[in-house]
Image 1 (cartoon, rainbow, N blue to C red):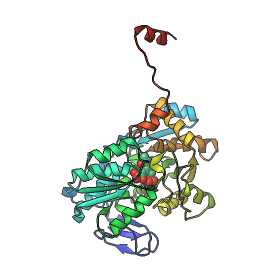
Image 2 (spheres, helix red, strand yellow):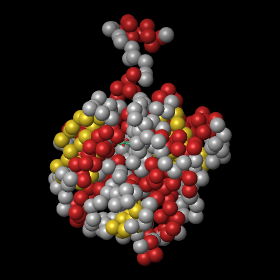
Image 3 (cartoon, rainbow, N blue to C red):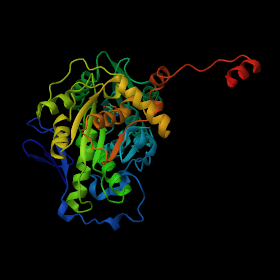
Image 4 (cartoon, protein in one colour):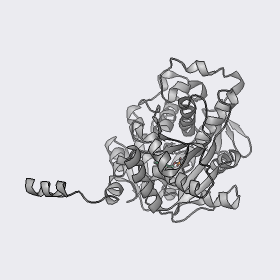
Length: 401
Ligand code: AN7
């Protein structure tokens, strides 16, 4: 097991705290795949969740593992939406069902466990909200100090409540997420804290288990396409890595087309894809109602674009209006309440079906990344006001109408 630079190939031991290569490239975790003996039966009888796949995770010492029983999220067949959108087979993998309500828990169980292995006492991150909520919870369980940097006024209420309530030191930055990340990276460089944003390749090791679970939940018959909301671009890269590893080991026979969806006001990866570029042009002032993906300079852009290009996937953007409409659609047709950023996968699917990029007889999995209760303000604004009633007479008048 090693950390390896995706640009120059330089390798680092897993106990070296480096985050990125000396050449500036992103690191990824590689295993000695030839020595991993796993077949489909190996998983029988194992507990469900992230650590079910321990052979393909970077922490082996069970005493160091910090878990809140993350992962093992439901994969819903969505027949009502199949009809509504006109597609043969649609599933939603609902990551809002994780302990703190987002997919970040998968990354944090691994990241904070690794912090234990390294003997680190202070952890930190910049966040649009979910990363901070998750890190705050896992560091509480691990008895570590937690510092989170948030873009002032732009974090959904539920996420802010979580970070504060789990006992993190919550710092609001005058500026957006990209600025907060720049600042916390400086703190990490100067060893004030162990950084647990997704520039840390160990985070992605946890998140790749989304891919593992989809493969298992579909009885090893991988879908044609996986549609993922994209912000800092870690998750789409991680899920792709998961599928590639299962493929390499021989557990699955196909790979899905990775399809990334960004918000109209924060779409540097979509623009790079449409130019056919491997590099992005960052946004200085990203803006979207989906505050989770209000990110202008995604750290993992290189990995994400590689996932999209090499899987023959696609990247598309959706407007705030399309996001909010999809959020309602998913709640009202399937009973699944997700936050706006999550609904971008559904909005993207709808758009790409209309554009003819996605075929109507594909088997598609949309990832919904965070719970609807994370952002109650946006949800309430998107609905009609409750009906107010003074007495029984008034109530009956309304019901009979
Ligand atoms: C619900 O919490 O970046 O492309 O700081 O919360 O892996 O960044 C959140 C990201 C999608 C994008 N959906 O995932 C943070 C943060 C939800 C999210 C994303 C986020 P990446």
